Length: 270
Image (cartoon, rainbow, N blue to C red; front, side):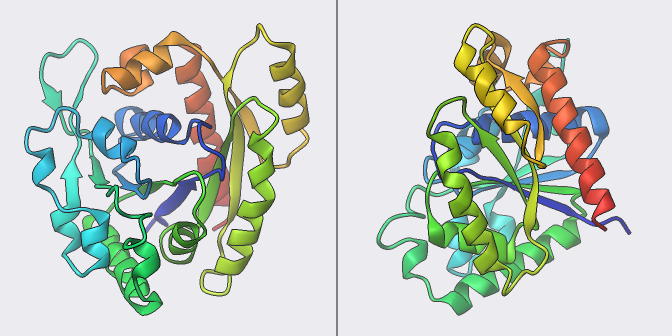
């Protein structure tokens, strides 16, 4: 039986392309590789949930990850995702589900108010559900900055971190914080580590972007850069992963490269 690949997209800074990249990566995995994917939305903005459920009529009726943390069955918070394939009129489930996010997760009454034993139990139940349903990949969308949510993710949900950087002077500042969070989580989950990094929103018109790309290439984890292009922004707006929306775009090729590389690295880590 193949190992389930559990990857969190994380950066302590906002606006780095975590949600867009998760959406695009899920499209490559499910739409082109026939992989069964569960997306877990731990970001209070709930953009992964809203984008993934754009074409689901009863999406508002589902429970959320906060309900799961309080003991609700995981199944009640998991919604099937519908995408429109290229050249098709109907919307289809390609084997992607989303564990719905909750805006209250980072409030004063959110995850910080829940005892560790209860958080651990929720993580156990989510993993049991993942195993029972036969997912090949789990992709976790993380908030910009939350030590408590990072601990929940790295201790109980994800074995690997995939780090998108935005092309600015501040994006790399959260890298050491992520390393510290994973070091703390290894007391519970010894295998957690960085599986890759990439630059999102690279614009070839800016010399600074090229300079930052060269700096990032020094990282052992670096994979590639994802271009700043209309196809990626439009695909998210229309609720279709970029490989569905414009399969021959440079963005589609970049996300295929990221998927291929992290898949290879995880297999080498078995």
